[in-house]
Image 1 (spheres, rainbow, N blue to C red):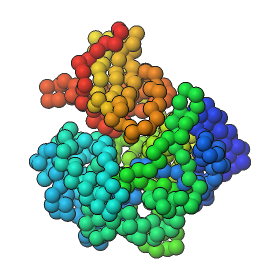
Image 2 (image 1 turned 135 degrees about the vertical axis):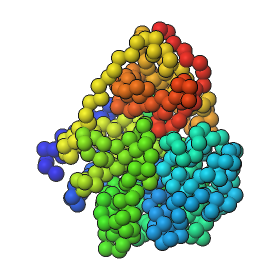
Image 3 (image 1 turned 45 degrees about the vertical axis):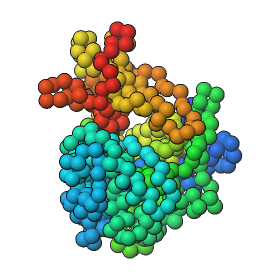
Amino acid sequence: MDKDVRDRLENFVTQTMERLQVPGVALGITDHGDEYTAAFGITSVDNPLPVTTTTLFQIGSTTKTFTATLLMKLVERGEVDLDAPVRKYLPGFAVQSDEDAARARVIDCVSHVGGWVGDYFRDTGRGDDALQKYVERMARLPQLTPCGEVFSYNNAAFSVAGRIIEVVTGEPFETAMRSMLLEPLGLKNTFFCQDDLVTYRVASGHIVMPDGPKVARPWRLSVSASPAGGLASDVHDQLAYARFHMGDGTAQDGTRVLNQATLDRMKQPVHEAGSMCDEVGISWLLRDVGGVRLVEHGGSTNGQMAAFSTIPSRQFALTVLTNANRGSELHSLVRQWILANIAGITPSPRPAIELASERLHEYAGSYGNPDAHTDLRLINGQLTLQTLAGPGALSDGALVPPPYDPVPVDFYAEDRVIVTAAPYGGARGEFLRDSEGRIARFRWGGRINPPLAQPDSGGG
């Protein structure tokens, strides 16, 4: 990378960190095999150590792509059929809707179209039976949409996929992941278990409060969430993983881990998404920016936010690991800077369309559930959006970040909106209608959110 570009990038990162109060960042870029990594800030405000390029951060839901990759290895071996019902491998699989549980296929679990409530976080212990117990408890989950029909981001479905891997391999999920994927890929700094992590330099998550960032606790995720978001990693391993997925299916030592056709299949669209991304593949979130296809994921845990983007057609990838809840805003801005200034990719503008004020009232209201919901209100004739978390969305004793102020949203197409200001600048939402043409759901953050209240003008 040219020194001038590198200096400008590093200045942009440090300035953005300071403005958003993100204590630490690790950054990696690979461009046709050339690797650039950098580290900034500290691991923890309570026990400050310099972040290095080998500091371990939680990568959250980027883990889902590892789970899907391992599952595809079993598909290649003929041990799993993506189109088979989940009940072929988990005969007792159940959610509240028996019809949908019976219809659910393996591929539905790794493409976010299960349709049942996806943000179901229950700690079922640290034993080898944690995933089994978790999947059994899913029997109480309500069905939001018919299985296989609508994209709605689903953490619980990936725990189902993890349990399928356990049943097929006869090993605990984390053991199978280590022996069948992490070790063959040479990812020596990628771990699930705290017992593995304790001897390494590890970033603590932070919640940015009015008086500055505070360490977020607890750090550990439950074993039941491992397939959905349990990995910690460093930027070097993340770039090696990116090169594997953009390559021909071989590891760095030449060992074949997956066939090229399997990697390509994972990047092919399975369903339209409409929010969070354009389409979803087999775990991968797919979107087009400036006419170029990005194959991406990212993750969020308690105070740690990660971004992971690949451009297979350019053999270009980047990862941004952060240790604060405002890291999502930081990695979005840094990713945009890198794409524009290094990869030469800039998004095409989405022209706003004007709606009459009487039509805007139709969209105003609260969507979600009592523990986490999104308010859409009209303020001085402008439709605004605000997300709010309730006590049930947080662990006992967890810090509650102050809510962001309402931000303006514009319509760029019928029933589709885009946020035009920080911290969600560029994020899209979509209103879904029922058979009679009434608004029935608001898809935001990739999730299907039912209305909680009648539309409310919120002050004109």
